[in-house]
Length: 107
Image: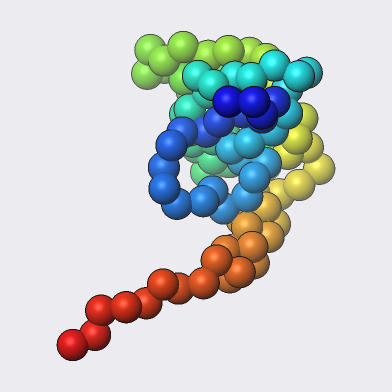
């Protein structure tokens, strides 16, 4: 845990873009961050918000009685400022190509 990056969960698959789930926050480790912030951001986009705000994320999380750390929400929004979700996802897909397949099986 020596990193100063947000941890967006322990899923074995990589996120589509590091900004959606991992961003430095003033030198502190927010190990408790979960994918809920990423999911709330994407839900706001699906609801028609081109550039969701931290308050949009907070409203979505509070609507399902989830806790929201405003510093984490604000950092996510600031890291994605000026980018569209579609661009971020497309860039993430390009990065996934370098992962390789693993294949195996057959029979």
